Length: 373
Image 1 (cartoon, one colour):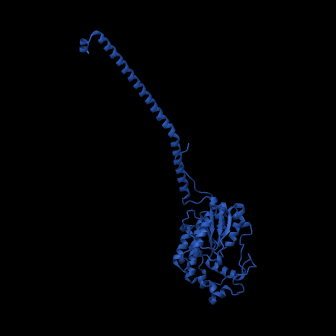
Image 2: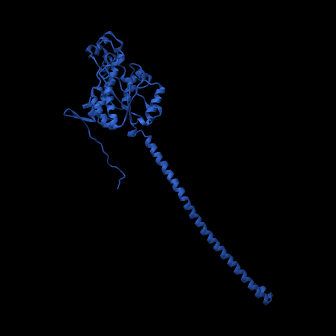
Image 3: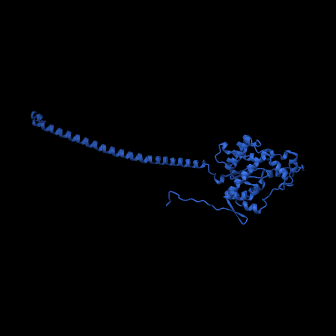
């Protein structure tokens, strides 16, 4: 710049200085504009980020809401699929009643209570009283019992063998109950029932009506209606729909019947202690049996059905039947059921002055954490 000032005339030097100044002002102005534009861009970018944050907020809220719904649905499903007892309004009881065990007396109590306690009673009537269902009927029955919501809560009863609902993919199983009886007493009652009927429907003609032969005469003559094979009934009813259950004298069937009684039945009573059975059911299932004990004690339902013309067997007839392995197995099952029933009863009721009383609740909860303020 110094060299140009020496070579250039003063007039041109002045013009050069002025041009240089204008150029510098222009450059500074452009730099300022660029800085202002950058500031605006930064502000706009921040604004866009803010808008983006606010615009994504509803989506994030919705996503979190959907996650919560999924979690709640999974929780509901896990509770529904748990092996706990079903909701009381969906409860189904199946009483696969063994013939001549006071089943009619007990069932009629359920019929008397169903209107008051708001549940349904349904009789399972099988063709020719066959206790074994075909496979297709098993499927139909399982589907009906589990999906027929209009009939829930429901009390189903009938002379059918135990049916395992879990085999059909059902998670909510019904509650099974039953009553057993001394095997010889049950057979004697059934023998006379086929010939003389009972006082429940006295006008109905029975299959063996007209046969005047006594049970003792049948035993002494080796009749077909009083053979030890006729004792084989309570075991297969509890054993179920397996072929081995109906093989007379099967040890496997006996063990399976015991297993089912303990693991698949809520309560199995005995004919000789029917009132205790009813009282315990009322305590455990009041939704169905509220008022059942009083009805049994004071109503006309106790000992409702009596076989006509029944004569007790002699000691000789009893002894002859007891020599068979079939009786020994059926009696073993009965004694097993009786012991289990008495065990449950001992932990449920007490007797005072000849009256039975239910025990009060004897468990409670403590050390509950975390603490609730």
